[in-house]
Every structure is written in C-alpha cells, then in structure tokens.
Image 1: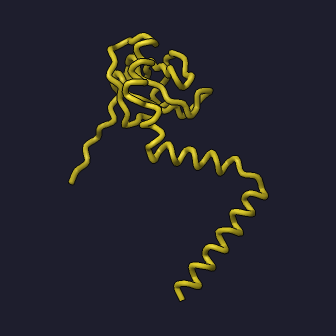
Image 2 (image 1 turned 90 degrees about the vertical axis):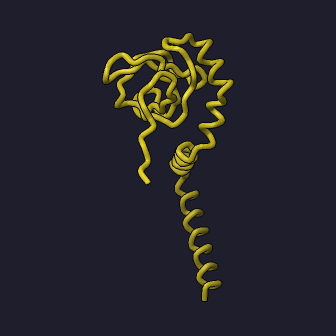
Image 3 (image 1 turned 135 degrees about the vertical axis):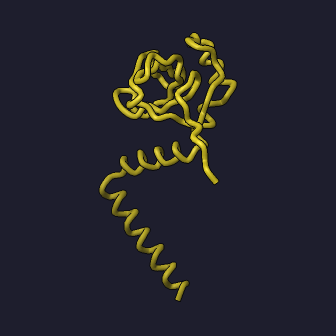
Length: 130
C-alpha cells in the first residue's frame, strides 16, 4: 500500500519552528510569500507574525481552516475551536520533544539514579526469564 504525502505548504497548516529564537514553538501559515518563504503567526505560542524560511519550520499534520492573511483574532478563535494545542500535545512528536527536554534537564545524579534503576529492572527481568 502506498502512503501519499499529505503535509503540504498551505494556508492554515500548523508548523513547528525548528530553528531560531522561536525554536520549538507552534505557528500557523498565514500566507505563502514565495517558494522558499512563508508568513507565520502563533497566537498562543508567542510567535509573532513574521516571514520565515521554509527550511526553519517543520510541517505538522494539523490544519486550521482560516482565510488567507487572517487577522490574529480570527486565528486565535480558529485555534480554540480546532483545539490545536490539545491535539498537538496528544501527538507522538510532541511527547518525544517533551521527553527529550526532560532528559536534557537531568543532573548527573539523576542520570546515575536512572542508570541504577535500569540495571535493577533488567536484573529482575533476567531472573524471571530464567
């Protein structure tokens, strides 16, 4: 079975900024400037309306129904009705990012405790498998 590509650059597509000062924040495509740049706005995430290169964003599966060059108020209302933040938090992608951030925040002692717990767990599993 062939899976078709469904993440197109289109008005209303929710994107994740993957570079720059807005790294890790969600935004919505408001307008396509040219083949390489888009106009984005993130009402709830703190991304100001700006032109950003496509190389600095990752397209998500989420989409909002908005008109081209929608006002911030219209966009905010669409995000609330579509429950974009809640839908994003349910995705595997978001869960992986949260886990990665949690792991990066660990101290040396936390990593040590994690290693010891992992060893104890594997010892218990080996004991039951025998």
